[in-house]
Image 1 (cartoon, rainbow, N blue to C red):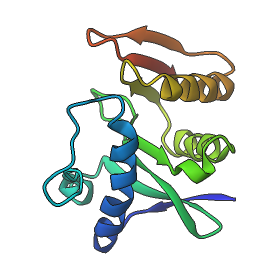
Image 2: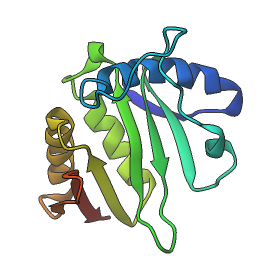
Image 3: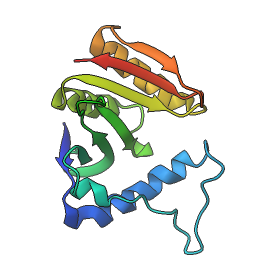
Image 4: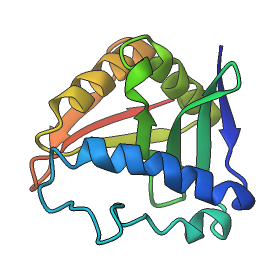
Length: 156
């Protein structure tokens, strides 16, 4: 069973720790991402996740084991829901846990969705196309922006 658990402010360091693996994986697509002098990647600024009501950090857990995270921005009057960052540790890749977590996120936030992947991250593009196509019964659109990012859009 997959569970989405909201990250509390006092769990921020745990989220930062998990994000190091995410950044490591992501660095293969963006050569500008490099390790700092201390051997870590520059951490994300997560401060807004505890001050802005439309930002939602979640741990993804499998039977109480931390296996990933999702950072979601819920819709406003001007902007759709979006998954800002999403990660499942390699040990659990391809086992359906990411699909279960993404489906739970879609069901948590109704309305329009907009999901983006960078140009060269073909595994992420395939992952999101598959999940969104299944979830919407193929009722979604896809486009590319000026940076050649793949963007899927749909509504729940």
